[in-house]
Length: 405
Image 1: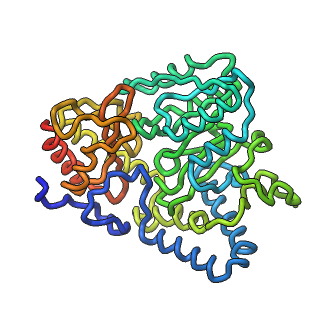
Image 2: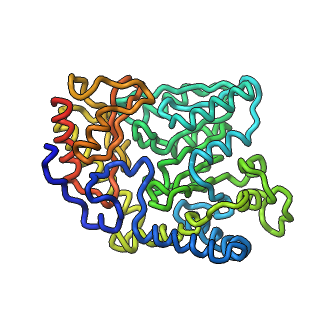
């Protein structure tokens, strides 16, 4: 098996500089930039280093304004309600560490939340004496109504905030975040939408959605340079939210610009090249790589491919799909069968031997992890424009050999 030729790549894969000797099925972890995006990123870095003072005083304010406008068109909101940040975990920290809670206030979160963001909840709750209430979401799951019922059944008269995923990281479930947001906000409960897997993987219409707060990575499914994300704060909530780094914007004369904008536009010297690249990313990937179509068409194509990949794996390994198609976006997680194949199940937070075998023996890059709901070993596949259906057949054959299926 290890001597078998590597599978075919898609006909647009050469737009990415990914190692051709690696079967890359893990776009979901950190994304991957097309070559033209990397060139755009370096252009802005060169501009910065050629004339740093002019860049920060004249060029960057206009360029980041253009970036917010491009993002706003994509996620349907007012650009003045957006802040450009480094990653979604920073966005979650920004919101939770800005808010004040009373002792006994309840913060609601499903048990499929990203571990780093759950850590922030626990840290902040401990500081204020608030209580984190965990809604249990089963996996496998029969449909989105199970999520809605589990979350809403966990609401009490002490619930003041809920952190909801667009797409869960470990289980790759496309959550019913639109209905959850409407119901929670309608009951006076603020929603923090963790859309780390958000823009570029599911359609976002933030003004219509109405969440108090939302944060999303651009370096994942938009394929922007690393360290590029946004924070959206509803206009009536902006006064209470401040960046993690307080700087000149706290006291700068408003001059027709909101305090929110002043505070987040300047948090000290940082490389803004990734953020300045956003208009080229947002307009360029559909135009230059995917036949001049739209981001919605890209999302639909990736979803179609990952569903095909999931079906290939399920058939080859003789396992059931753990959720209906409607709960799949551009990633899919499967529980691997219990058997006497490679390695015993490792402890949580430790590398899985199967991941190492797939990488070193088959040149496959795909996450294998331990998850507790229910306890087991899980594998998550992603689909991006550079992937091809043959890559999922290749993965399925490798897993069949190593797991003895």
